[in-house]
Image 1 (cartoon, rainbow over the protein chains, first blue to last red):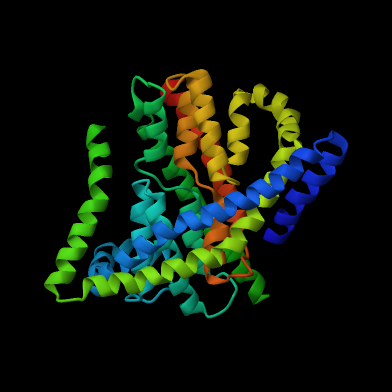
Image 2: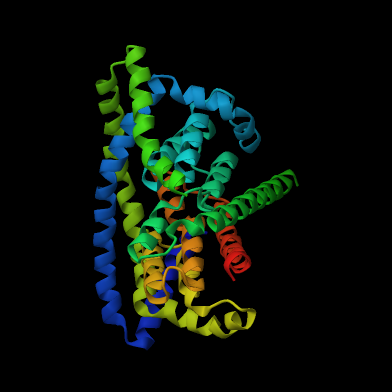
Length: 196
Length: 176
């Protein structure tokens, strides 16, 4: 599916530009965006190195294990196919906590580590059930403190920059719950199909 | 609310403090372990590069051609009919595709309509409560080499749709 979306975005854009006379803009955007993607990747190095280094220390110190023990009941329900003491649990948890506090930069490396561990469990290049559940939680944007948005509101002299925290929490709760339900729906659908 | 901002500022340094204190107490070679973990970060950033270049270029073509704007213009009447301000539509469409573009649009809406206007609050909530599905999919699956993503994209995009609808409903109830 991602192959279709990826190709379609470019194909539609190029064909549209033929009729719209915006080919020059497309040409420019093509190279500028490739350039900014590289800048983005390089920019990620600092965050990735710092957090992966710190997480390694946290892991060695047994802090991840401690976190898992506290939240085990909830995480076990959400990810039934991950063994109880597997390191994937710790990374999943750290990622979710970082996301809740709007620390997107800290969340990404932990999310990647969680994926790595889940791949060790599944051992194929096909997304596993727990990987998709994990993505569903991530993409629905579980947030407690939308730090970046508050910063922007402050910049434009809002009377109350944090007044949107309440609506954001309610909205992302609804979105995350729905994501989990949709995820379950498609999972059981795929199970039924495999059994036929 | 100042409590929440304080917590946000304290949480990372405090986490680092706890990690380093515990690790030192347990006689773990902290610096060496940190460096070892950090090396993985360098490798990871480079392995992500092709995934990001591919995705960002395709999105940029769609935007620069004007096709995205044309599509938005096309469904504008339907939105006005159900009471959704058309000004937030581009944001709603771009949010799952590009995080930086969405952030730019949010800033733009807040600047134009004011942070304390209905549209300003709606844009803030939308930006804060949804996430960039395509980016997350690209980065997470790309980093570990997942090629068949099964129903992941469907789940992500449907969740975004619900998040956007929910933000409109909730903001209307609370501030409307």
